[in-house]
Amino acid sequence: MPAPYDGRFKLLAEEFPGLLLRLLGIVEPGCSLETIDVLRELQLDPVQVDHVYKIGNDRLVHFEAITSWRADRVPKLALYRFLLHQKFALPMDSYLVLMAERYAPRTLPERIVYEEHDGFRIETPYRVIRLWEIDPAIAFEPGCEALLPWVPALNSGTDDLVRATEAIQHLSEHPDQAPYAVDTMIGNLAVLASLRYDKLEIRKLLEKLQRKIMLSTDLFTDSWLYKDGKAEGEAIGEAKGKLEGQREDLRTAFQLRFPEAPLPPEIETLTNLDAIQQAFRAVLQARASHEAITAIQQAVQ
Image 1 (cartoon, helix red, strand yellow):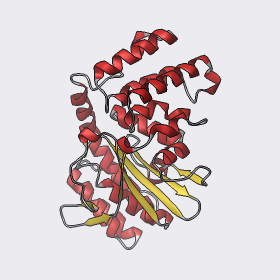
Image 2 (cartoon, rainbow, N blue to C red; image 1 turned 90 degrees about the horizontal axis):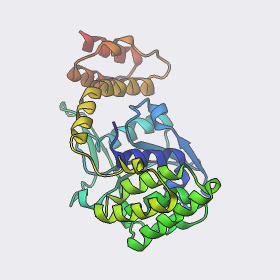
Image 3 (spheres, rainbow, N blue to C red; image 1 turned 180 degrees about the vertical axis):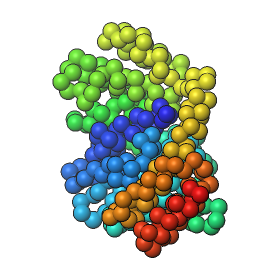
């Protein structure tokens, strides 16, 4: 189950990619943009928050958004970059989007490294985008209303937060101008505000907004920071999905390396993480599909 911040970033990336890339300073208005569904192209686990876009016909932009550094997740930026390059053979810019200053590492590595225990290693250059350093002015431009819930996570002050809530209030009175449901926008604003603002301050502002546009109090039930036990439940769910996630990585690697070959059915029978990882490395290093298939079959044994 994705974290609340990551989930909202994922929705913005999927529904309004042009606005997101403008917000992050990656493209200019009017830039030719083709959205590539990285989940479909690489057949990745849908809870991953990983995105890739084709800019014109010249390059790919690939980025990962994180609330806090995770040693088991960040290195996959290098892995996915490698797999995307294998598939599209285009120059690529990789970005790591840090969403919260208080969770950001004091120092960051010069390059992101994906490494296996046997020495298999992929390194990638990357650029860092700090969300809290971005000017929120773009959110108030016509046609950029989908960015209003993100104002509190940007380089904003209380006045900006008030202005954003007032703009959302205006959308409640003119729903034809709203990019999506106003109650969803307010719920997203509440979650994202908690990245930078005091909880009590947010509550007072949102309760004022709630009275103005007559929203149900149920809207805010899941809008705050993690409740007791929620993080634990997410960790359990993540552990249960790890095995399938590893199998997905193996399927992805095989299909990208050998698109003409049918997917080996033995992958579905793999239940040992070490064996899956061994097969994964062998597929990346295989020179032909029959070598990769043999490695997978041996991993089952």
